Amino acid sequence: MAIIFYTKKYTETLKKMVHRFRNENPKYKDSKITYAGRLDPMAEGLMILLTDNDVHKKEEYLGQDKVYEVEFIFGPVTDTLDILGIVHNEPKQSIVLPDDTLKKEIAGLAAILQQQYPEYSSKTVHGKPLWMYAREGSIQTIEIPKRGIYIYSAEFLKKKNIKSLELSKQIQQNISLVEGDFRQECILNGWERYFTSYIDKEIIIYSMRLHVSSGTYIRSLVSELGKRLGRPATSIKIKRISIGDNLLT
Image 1 (cartoon, rainbow, N blue to C red):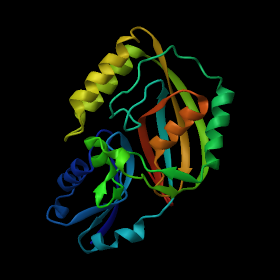
Image 2: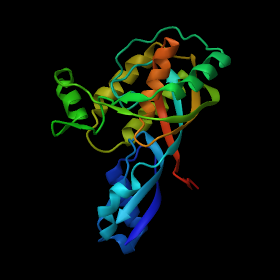
Image 3: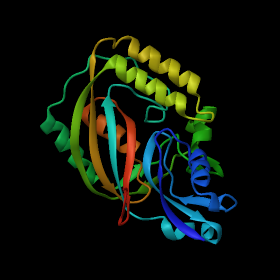
Image 4: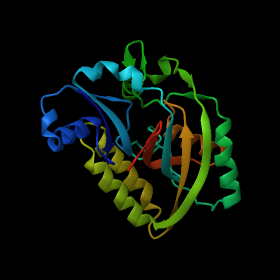
């Protein structure tokens, strides 16, 4: 029996993460393994793994506060709210935000007390996860539930410039690394079309740190930030750096 803090890699599915864990720890080769909490493929960082008899104690390890760092860009809109989604809009001329404006709106996220589950999430409604409704095109036939959240702090970290061609290559390469059926072909085609109008231009990647209650969707907060600033925002990479008092090393 064991309760293990383990680091999930960027672009890794949870299935692939567990497989890697078994390979790195042969003594758990035949053990039952589950995880308390989830991370999307375009997220990395700290996870709690439970093995053998402890797999039945999952509920005891859910509900802990977490800290995340997230990189995001303004401009594209995707159906998943991160880069592993189909782009729904055409690029527009980017306007550089004053740092003070951005910092103020990021800090203002702490006032959010309720959040709707993303359409592409594992939350179940009538026994079926939301992402299935979204894939089927029937998401409008159900009421998407909301949940209460608490944001202890939200702060701007930094920004960096990147050539659009380089960012395009990075996004397409990372999407190609994700295993399983995530509609990769359609997603890659969408990003290729999106960046066609951005050749030789610079894009700003922003980052912020969020200390939140359990179950808070970081990609949804990024999207909400974009709405408050009047421009779409999409997550590129999410990193969980702590669960409760346990820090990523």
